[in-house]
Amino acid sequence: MSESLSVSVLPEEAVPKRSGANGGWKDFVAGSLAGAAQVAVGHPLDTIKVRMQIGGAAFSGPIDCLARTVRSEGIRGLYKGMASPLAGCAAVNSLLFWAYSYGKFAQTGSLDVTPTLGQIAIAGAGAGIVNSILASPVELIKVRLQVQNSTSIAAGAALFRGPVHLATHLAQQFGVRGIMWGFWATVAREVPAYAAFYTGFEFTKRRLAQALAGGDSSKLGAVPLMCSGSVGGICYWTACYPLDVIKSRVQNAAAPPRGLGYIASAAKDIMKEQGVKGFF
Image 1 (cartoon, rainbow, N blue to C red):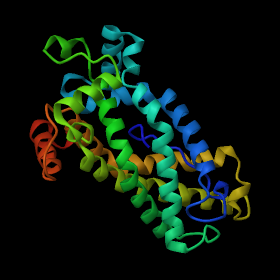
Image 2: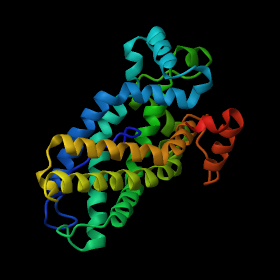
Image 3: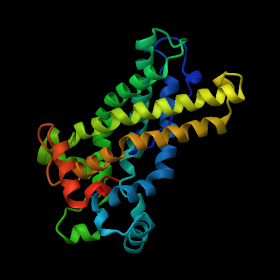
Image 4: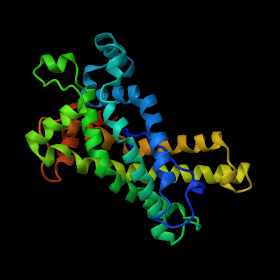
């Protein structure tokens, strides 16, 4: 989910109780609406996050990054790259919802069976792998547009008018590698991220259901579910933030990497430049 981490959730009781493969229309609608709302609200913060991850040494902190972005580029600077996740959020979130639901079904044999937290974690990790197929190119376009500013253009970087222009350029210059740039870095982030997210969400939801609704999570209101989602979000970023820094660095490099060793290489470069704090 993923505008870098932002995730939307569909309460378990809202998933159609038919089969692992046939109950997808609510997943699609929920993923589309929640994803679009998340992008609209969270993108400015995500822009600051990405700029800090890639050029953190140039800023004294997030407030400094925010102030300098608005001062040099206006409020619109905070929304650079938003078209990519906004256009892709329906597909990305729907694929994530489907993969997670199917992952639970594959382990329990029925959506009527409540999975254990271990099964939730496995389903979340599997959903992260599947989700990366769409999330990786969406994130790539977003990240590269988010860091495009007057300074980078003056230094010789190309100016891209939007996601289609950038995607076309990458495909023409690098082929499929240019579109799937940083795929394995995205997988490395998504697997622990969604395992942690869904486990944290389900654990909190079940505890709140025991405390407030006699153990019936279908009776929980919006506030308890929001609290559960908040805990899940904290778990998400706690599990994956250093990997997200690596992914952002990789996807903003001069050329797409080859092989699998680039993840470790990027981590070494960050450690050499900024030490452990560079990962946070």
